[in-house]
Length: 346
Image (cartoon, rainbow, N blue to C red; front, side, top):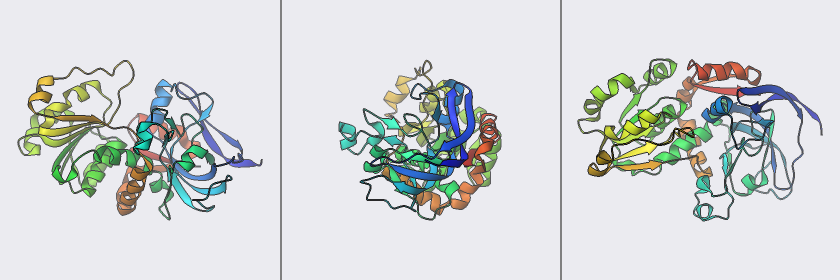
């Protein structure tokens, strides 16, 4: 093995993520794929790992799963990919054997594993894609799409997964509560699906400024109760999407939906704060449909790539690109809400 120039971001414990020299370039085993990483974005789950730790990770472990890179080596038996192809991947790896995998719902596999959690991730100069992910089709080709944009394929695919649960031809209005990066991506996806009336809820700051700059209606949380009926046309929204990991926000979200409307619980709540105190009468008498959504599949990643390519100029306004050595600066910008989405270049 040869030593690589470059760096990796390694999880050592709660509030202990370190930028370290990459070290030896790994050799691929049968069925695996070696990627030279071109870009890797900081995900909300990476931020959560920094703040709270992650029971799925055994320290020290390289983090990162929102990436784009070039295949530089293939293990024996890999025949659907070629060295030199540029790829991203669906983070969640199914077992291929359970009832959910057989239905194509690998994102809710009973024996789920994930890149950057159960195995070393891609916030590094190089990463190895496990044989299971390669054989299951998790690796998605991105062609000539710019690396920093292609790295958003995975988070964008999660928004697409959630919206895929809906009769989109019947959705005319949508409220997005919580405008982090995923809230922004939901708004862009909704626009691409033809939804005209999209209202975002966000506190003042850079993310609100960006959304207003690219043409979305944004209101503050303190304005929501007073304005949601007028903004929705008088009856509430066809769709309410909660991307804010707030117990109070999630409990109250049903009141903003139109009768017969949908409420998407996209954001998860931390363990110990996951129980909601909700008005069941609102749900019952308004015949609301509440649903959860988690992760994505390779099919969602492919669709995400199409939207990213079409809306490249829009996504360039959302991301901040910096060298991987500046990881802590990027993380601090996300934590203090001065940056919307950070993409690291190894």
